[in-house]
Image (cartoon, rainbow, N blue to C red):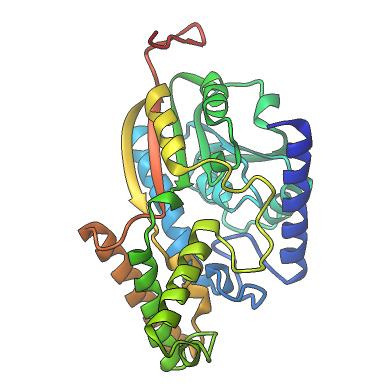
Length: 328
């Protein structure tokens, strides 16, 4: 990514983080509060955060336990406001977390300074850096929703591997929106419509707008576009380079450059649904639990396609003296 593109990415994320901070957002899974700024995102309610982001962190920790060692050194690349790094350090790991957005790092540092959960804490340092500026090597490089911001996936992954110690791990969670289909979107449209009819969805007039098969079909297409682009019609994108590469491209490079240890499909839709629930906590939390159960069951049985994936790979034995030997 060029310096100009990096600067545009940083500015976009600085603006997002500043907006969220003004709205009262606390980027800490254990100290999160309700935040009406988020109208459809799981970040609206700590209960929803745990079902989505909490599960992401638990998966990372499970993969680290399965393939790593206690207390290893982790570089969290593109850490944002730092909530994943914080949980890794709370689990006893030695974490360096970097991001090119100065405001994101400032908020992460402030949150760390206020951390009351210190028992078993490893270490955590937040720094304003790009991957290219990192000089040390680590046991693990972690990317959570970062690689898909780069068009040159091969280059990013190879630069990451250069910063891994021998036998080091690259661990990532990235979107694969291209695998999602209209049939998946139709299930989300049905769920939202039923919630709206019961008064539990934020768009109270949703069903009133869907009176014919053609209108429903148009809504399904809108839902599909929303999930593939991660934005509503007219909504500002996350950053200028969001979705610059596909999940298929990322996975192909990872499998070429690393020795694959584990792949897990994940998260068809709850990340853009749970926050849209409305009503008393007793009702919305029960609905969130059931919808999450449906999502996991449907993905396991193949009724829903994943919208993201986890991957963990080991620095390949083909790498000699820091150079990758590629087939001719």
